[in-house]
Each structure stands twice: as structure tokens, then as C-alpha cells.
Length: 500
Image (cartoon, rainbow, N blue to C red; front, top):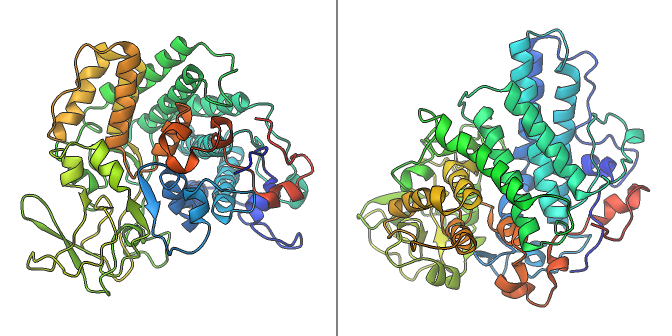
């Protein structure tokens, strides 16, 4: 993979079209819209719905897991997914093009909501809630962009014509983070604790900001490319990460907390469980993909369309789609080297066999490798399911607090997670440095297959030491993906070489 400047031509990011004569995606006029609260809600939902675009949704795993040590795609899967697996991504790799494009679609839609509603005629409490959520969504999409591609254009106004799409690059990666922080802080001020399935609230904004500060602090500490020369105080930045994570962990005990039942976290009928701070609002009753998902098909093996059953250690069976594609497979070494044999995150959530409705193992087995049952909907309707990505989870933020704050505060949090998994406590008496490394290892076990792994490797400058397929690269080459060539070609303000 060659490293090149990571930027965007916002025109094609939003347009997704080769012809300059076509109307870009996501463009619409707000001149006669947002006159009522219903209008404002519709505009906000339009911004949320950008997350549901097929290649953006699947990009959670394409980008977050496939290039790492935890997952790989089946060998005969067509397309550019193997470029991600093998670290041969180029500016013409379609999957990263899509991911980049949909980030900016989400940003443009959030920008429209912020501009048209903020300071308008709607009641203050309505403005605060809707603009606060839109600010979160803008920050969320920029956080995905900057961690994936590095320096890119920073666009804070809605784009409604091609003439507005040649945005220059941000001055630096830090400038993008400064805007993310500003948006999160404004969202926190505007939002209240208000847990609603598929939406974000004050706790979600605090959670996102804690992850932002942890990324900055650890990236600087580990000398990650793009961050090592940033003018930030590592200790102060860790402290800010801890402060915001602490609010999430301590301030909302009736809304958020550790789910004592590991499997319940992944129950499609419990999207409002205590772990779920931000979860996508999809449901099998939807009429088209995006309203429902096909996520289980990506993970489950194919059984010639005959429903499969997953057997758990207690003997219970869970029904799953039998027409799975089995695209996302788990590396054998990741299972055996990462988990103790008694770890419930292995015995309950990772499998190598399928069963019939009577609990008899299917043989010969169509299973190609280990797969996870984190994404199973027993009441699927054909290919339509209610399985959802876990965008921000309480345990993630508890581990942010543990890593940022250190052993004194962190040990009980890590040990709660380990205890739920049925394994013993973390080795006591670790130094701050060793404790933080142990927390990152715990994140690998707890958050596996949830789209976090690549970003943990990048912020600790450990991609090439960890991922066999990236071993021939430098950390600089592995730090960011190249900007899509289509964007470079159409935006004269975006150079074609990387200067992150």
C-alpha cells in the first residue's frame, strides 16, 4: 500500500458519480424546510440515516476488523475486501471510497440541520436537542474520517451545489480533532440524559469525547504517525479522557451500566439494554436494506438455506439464518492466543460448529472457520434481520476510563468485565505503563468484531507488529488509508501525495 495525502473532493464524496452533470447525493434545498418541529426531526433523521448506507454500515468491519488480527474474509469473497485484508489498499479501492463518501454524506446532512435550525424560530429546548444530536453526528463522522484517512477537508457548511465542493484540506489533523472536540462539547451542553433507541444523548456525546481524548493521548504517547509531533500534553489529555468517561460510568446508573449477562448484550430484543449508549435503529420489519440489516449473513455460515442452530455451553439452542454468506471469519490464532479456554467471550460468543433443531451437530460441516454469534436474529424474515452494530457500548467507555485513569480507578472496572466473562482478575500491582497495555489487551477480547480493533492498533503504533499481512510496511504506511483517486482528480485543492 502506498501512502498518499488523505483528503477529499467533497463533490464526489457526496455525489458518488463519475459525471459532473449529475446531481450529487445528499444535496437538497433547506430553504423551505425546517419550519416546524416535525420538519426538523425529519432533517435530523436524514442525517442519522446516512449511517445506514450499506457500505458505510459494513465498513464498520471492513475498516475496523478485516485489516487486523481478529478477522479475515472468506477466500472466494469477490471485490476489494482482500485489499483491506492484505494491506494493499490503493486510491482506487472501492470499499474505502464508499466509506469516505458516506462519512461526508453524513457530515453534509448534519451541517444542514445545524445551519437551518440553530438560532431559528423553534423552541429553545427543541433546538438544543436536535442541534445537539446533529453536532454529535458531525463529530462522529469526522472521528471516523480522521482515524481512517488522516487529514481531510473540514467542511462546516452544507453543500448544495457542485461549485461548493472544492473544499481545501484542514490545516492539520489536530485542526480536525479540535473541531470534533468543539462539536462534542457543544452537544454535551445542549443535550440531556435521554436514552432513546437509535438516538444519542448527553452520555453519548461524553462517551465520544472520552474516546477522542484517549485517541489523542495514546497516539501521542506511543508516537503514532500523524500524532507524535502534535503539541499536546499527554497527561492532561489522558485526564480529560478519564473525566468524560467517568461521567458516563458514574452519572447515569438508571440508564447505563454493565449488563451482568454477557449474552444479553447481543440479544436483538434488548437494544435498550444498559450497555447500549449508541446503537443503530434497524429492524427486520423495514421495507429495504438500511431499515433492516443483513449483518448475520456476513458472519454466519451457509447451510443451503436450512436454518442453523447455535449451541451454547448450557445446552440452549439459538436459531440463525441458514443462508449466511460466511464472509467474516475469525482467525484461529486470535481465538487460541487471545482467550482462556474458560473465557465466556470465547465459549459463548465464538463457535466452530452448527447444529440442527434437535441439537445434533451438522456433518459434514459447512463451517469454514470460527464465527461469532454477536450478530444473530432468531426471528429473521428471509434475509431481513434486526441485528445491529454496537456503535458505543458501556464496557468500551469503562475501558476508556480504566486506560486513561490508571490502576487505582481502572482495576475494578477491568475486573468487572473479566468477572462477567468468567475469568480471574487482572494481575495486581501493574505499573501504569503495563496496566494500560493490559487494558488494551482487554479491549481486544471484549470488543472483538465490533469495529474497534484497527483504531486501537493505529493509536498504539502497533499495526505492523501485530498484523502479519502488514509486517512489510512501516507504521507510517499503515497509519492511514489513501484518499480515493476520484476525489483527488476532481478537487484541485487536494494534492495527490500524503502530507499528514
